Image 1 (cartoon, rainbow, N blue to C red):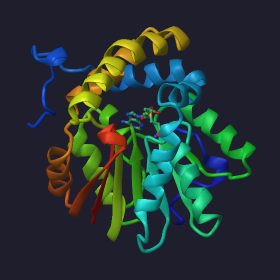
Image 2: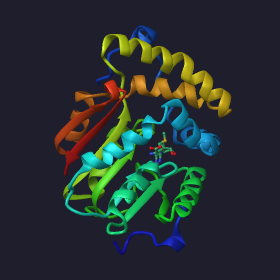
Image 3: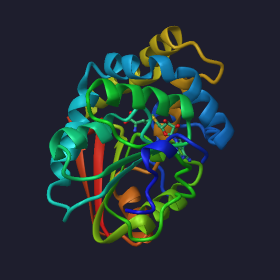
Image 4: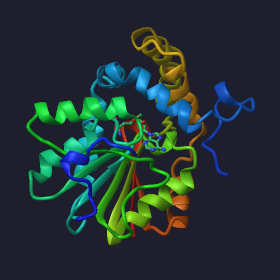
Length: 262
Ligand SMILES: C[S@@+](CC[C@H](N)C(=O)[O-])C[C@H]1O[C@@H](n2cnc3c(N)ncnc32)[C@H](O)[C@@H]1O
C-alpha cells in the first residue's frame, strides 16, 4: 500500500455482441470511445451526473451498487480499488460496509467527476483517495488489491480486454474482480418496454437536463447495445486470467454483476 497515493497527491496527473434488436438490426457504426471524447463528455455532464443517474433509474442504481457490495462477499481482505469511479458511488458503498477497516481507492480519468466525488465523500465523512488514472494504464503495481471493481465504466473504456487485463493485473492472486454493467433484459414484455424507455425516453430527458455537446444520453443506449453481455463478457474475463467468472443479473436483467477470481 506504500505505492498508493496519499491524500496530498490526490487528483493529480495522471465477437460477440448482444442480441441485436429491431432498433439496432442495421449495422450501427462503432461507438466512438476515444479517450478525449469520453473524458470531455463526462466532464460536461459531471455536475448533473448523480442527479440524473438516480432520476433515470428511479433510484435503482443505488440498490445495484449496494447489492454489488453484498455479492462481493468475503474477498479475503482489502485494499479495494474502484476504477472508472466517476463521482465515487461504488467506492462509497464499499466504505459504508467496510467502515474504516479497509483501504479504498477510487480512480477515474475525468477530473470534474473526481472533484465532485471527493467533495461528496468529505460531506459524508468518508474521505477516500480519489486518483486521476486511466483504466488502460493503472498506476499501481501488480498484485496490489484484494478487490478491483468497476461500475458502469468498463463499457466506456476504449479497449475492453485491456481494461479487464489491467484490473486483473493489479488484483492479488485469490482476489476478486467485479464488473457491474447495464445489460438488456430478455424477458419479452419487460424487454420491449425497457428498450422503448432506454432508446426513446431516456435520451430526451437526459439531454434536456444535462445539456452537452457529446450526446451523452444517446451514447448511453448505443454503448450498451454494443457492449458484450452475459457469457460473452464472462469469456472476456476468463481470457483476462480470471477464473470462476459468474454473472448475476439484477432487476429483470437491466444490470448484471460479473464476478471473477484471479
Ligand atoms: C458512467 S460513469 C460511471 C461512474 C461510476 N462508476 C458510477 O457507478 O456511477 C463512467 C466513468 O468511467 C470513466 N472512464 C471512462 N473511460 C475511462 C478510462 N479509460 N480510464 C478511467 N476512467 C474512465 C468516465 O470518466 C466516467 O467517470
